[in-house]
Image (cartoon, rainbow, N blue to C red; front, side, top):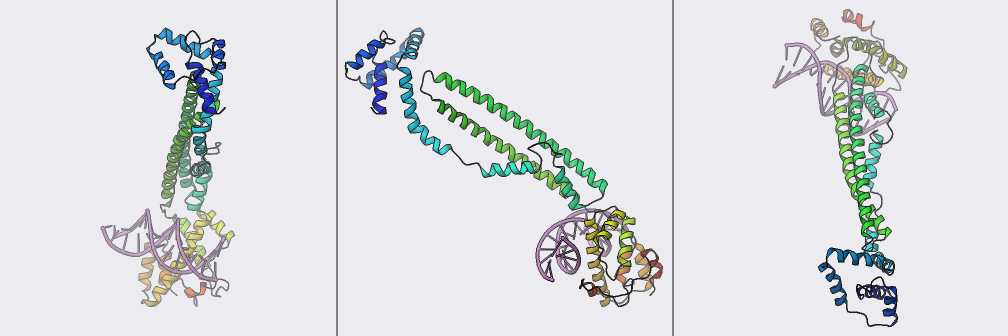
Length: 362
DNA sequence: GTTGATGATTCCTC
DNA sequence: GAGGAATCATCAAC
């Protein structure tokens, strides 16, 4: 017997019964076994519609009788089977999505930033990395670092609280729908599989809301990060003592102003700056020194009075002095540094920068 | 507001 | 990866 026939038989078995017959298994069996002609579907529908005209008590009684009918489970089973094989099976294929790559990206980012996952200092690693990359005085960086961490912790807290709310709402709604469907399964064919599918749909809807939350959180983190990095991009001049230390090293190693890693570390320690700042400083210093040399070879040499005036005008005045060429050791030109594998052999400038001010006459 | 100095960044070469 | 060169962005003096 195919599904259609079984269903119709089932309906006939129920629909064709009088109120008195319902609940009387013998009567049903009798009718079926006699091979009574199947009732017209119109009749059945009419009887169903007639239920709405009945009083509440009558309807309740009929409902109860239908629920208790011994054929009901079989009928529901057939109907469920048909549903599975038709609409739900088609929908089921469509619903089985692969994991969304966007959600995976968002999850990875939130994890990396320390927003999701276990608490591990609220992105202090990211902040520390950014601080190390950008340099800045230790005090400043620690202030900005803690500020960044505090803001990130705030984002983390909001994210988790919202996530919790969504999860709670999702769970409540799922329970509600499940109860509703279980309740309805008494009066209409609903298989457990269908309930499961419905739960999956609800979870999918809620996960799309979660994705929005994750997106917003990621955006907030990116904004915070860019603000944090922009803030550290603000340049602050090194203090006078630090500049003097760096200049002292530069001019006393003018023949080969390439400090080793150890020297850089020592200079960084002395100046209270990072090694990368020392590297930056020497990089800038070399290039600007060379430029000044080149420029001044094309210009008339300033008088010593002018030079000294300019030299003492600014902090330290080394840039000006070097620009004037007064610091250039005999025989050194800017191109000498180009071959770093073969540093030029030149005489070192006389004395430390501090004493060079008075020794600029040569 | 303009200008020069200067720390930082980026791109490129070696 | 280190360094050179160009450039950006900011500071500070005027």
